[in-house]
Length: 368
Image (cartoon, rainbow, N blue to C red):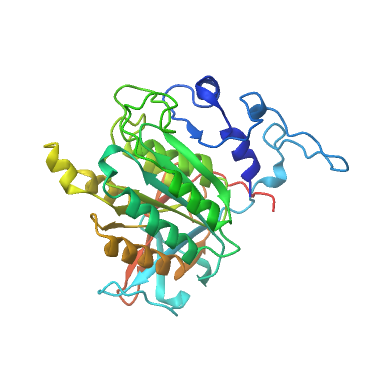
């Protein structure tokens, strides 16, 4: 997995370094993912320089500067993870390949492989909303989210934590250490965008109108963190679903998630009392439905109820450990970057929870 390159790319300190990274990495309208706890010796120039060679260590070539044709996949195989449920929402195990049909752009495809993947390594991103509207639910999210990570992660899995409010911040990079992930969640604090730089540990606001850069956070999680990973990948968003001030749109977040082959779950923690006290309308759920349906996850509405949030995490844990994996070589062999609609059908009429499509681009095989 390409963890070290991602880490170096995100390792910045201070507003000057953040500005340099923004200019160098996301020219124009692309957001930047800050890192909350950089290495003491990290700076903007180190993020672009190769790591120092240790004694006795062989210097590895920079694959980004020297592309190697052997890294390209010769056969374009589409792999889809999915859940199967009955009409009551109960997961259905022990099904076989012959019980499914795969359609791409409404054309039947030949299934090349089929497995029930309950223990395949999982790469998981936890995205937690710390904008002002989450004031009354944030502590609940941190407590239950930490317990979920302890429940679901094995020694084969990795996870990271992103906090978003006026900016998206990588609070904890990839790790297998549940205690570090729980500590990262506990560090998250409410930031309304009015905090002065350096006070309260909050990020520096980068635009006066930005309030909750939800779409930017999803894009950065998919594009910067998950796109180069392999296997099972998922994001879990703890948010009320309201975006205010993102540089990107919901369609950009959806496209990034689909290109990263990442499932997206949204635990809708919406304190309706907050919106009522400010005489504000609430409309976050509709956009979150679009995001999760396209990416193969779902929205679970928990409000501000502790028990509902815990039950929702239990449901996600069961779904992530009860997936099927189906693969096929598309009959449409053009790798033109176009969007392909996907549909998996159950011959027994079961409900299929899977991503809605993918983008036909050449895939790279990452070194092991």
